[in-house]
Image (tube, one colour):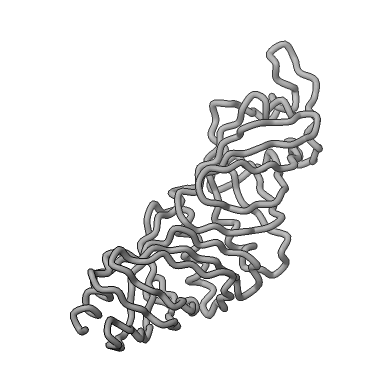
Amino acid sequence: MDSVVQHLFNHSRLEITLARVTECTADSYNISVEYQVTDTGPVGSVIDTMLVDLVYLDRPWGKTQLPKVKMRFNGAHVHFDDQTIHVTDMSIWLQFCSDLIHNEKLVYHLRNGEAHLKGPFGTTAQSGYDKDIHVLGMNGFPVLIKDVDREEGKVTLTMRNLGPFEIDYGPTVFEIQEGGEEEQWRTIARLKGDFFNKRGEYHVPFEVETVSLDGEIDHAQGGEVNESGISPAAKKLGLDVEKTYYFRGIRTDKEGAWTNEAIKFIRSPILLTEKFISLY
């Protein structure tokens, strides 16, 4: 039995395929998780539920209850739904959220678990449980303008999340900004809509408000264009399909929630389209 335990805990792999974060508050969130356990060895076993620390960069941010798992020779598929995580260290949780957006890969850890294992023929064992979890990040969170509805004053963006973590931010405000010298940013458009950062590639519609050079907001109905096809307002702003602008998270409507800080980690390069410029 000792060899079974050693193989299971030392050599098995735990791969997160989905981690959906919802119901975000000032110091908690709910999470639903799906994961695969592989390389568990040839002998079946059962691991009881256990409480483990969630750790990133050697600092715990909370605890999670792993469910009872029945291991087969080919591993196991495991899921649990809507478990509430109380965040004990908000700074490291926010660092994890930031690195999920900007990094290609990252590692967090399950630590300080006490595993109770049942093997064949009534055998049992107990062991400490520590596991490194390798996940893909979003690698910068690519964003593209997919479509523009000038009459409705709406824009649809295509977004791509390469990792398994999803976060429901709820009603959210973004801005498209032009970078200046010494981090002097100029807002050229404000986008509002429900934002649920899903896995894979997906499309999100936003209401869009254009912002003039003097900061006045317009509801993006578009103006008269000159012979070059560019309105005086767009020309005055220097809008150009060749320039790189930035899509930046500003705030959510969940007052006091940690998502108000986490949304600010989104700052993705974006190119304007001629159709988008026609909103001015």
